[in-house]
Image 1 (cartoon, helix red, strand yellow):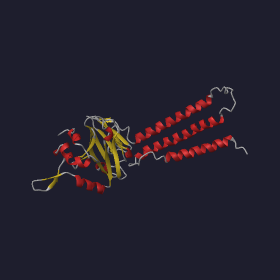
Image 2 (cartoon, rainbow, N blue to C red; image 1 turned 180 degrees about the horizontal axis):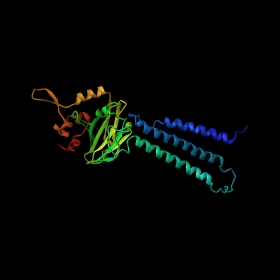
Image 3 (cartoon, rainbow, N blue to C red; image 1 turned 45 degrees about the vertical axis):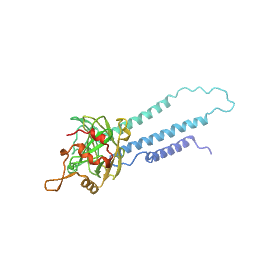
Image 4 (cartoon, rainbow, N blue to C red; image 1 turned 90 degrees about the vertical axis):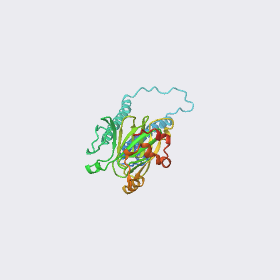
Length: 311
């Protein structure tokens, strides 16, 4: 019994749809998502992979079918049939990509807006997103994180980040800690105030789906709330010189208790007149003096410290 061509086409369409949907959700091309809003970025990436897989199977399938079905028969020396353009078909294969691109543009714009991309000010009490990628009073900010109530906004951890050739320097103003690695507590809002000491760098954490330029003479802000404990790479994503590829460090997302232990173990201290240890606040020492004890342990070279300005 000969199966009608429309039934065969329907079956093939269902199979292509199922394969595309499965691969779009199981491609394994993205690193783990370490924040809630990273899942929004993954959602549009998975959708694009689903569409791309379907188009690939359809186009390559048609090409393979035509190569086999319409190949020249042995001994056939005649010219192929003269076939003119098919206007409805041409309109169809022009309209489908146009619709897909338009839909992806609207969807990606909506995600960008949900992440705070169009909000020109930094408002810790705004909802659903607070910090935006926009110019405001000389700052550029990009925020990816859950909505914060007033109490959560007060708990925001502020870290100053200095990008230099070829290292990242992290300063915790509240504790005076200066280190070559970034430590943050899980589920707590974090704000990075970043500036470059020489050339343009780019702060990139793939697991957060975040990347932000670090510019000399201009502060850029990066906000996030990591929700997955672990150790994640911090990479410079902007060609910044001969050793750009080696400008790497790590971000540690820890439980609040472990983070507090790290703070207590690394907070600089000195003896007061009574011999008791007291915390040294950041303004009391230059960045180079703060960082000196960490050269060997953190892998920061002395030449990098020399680039730091003294206050």
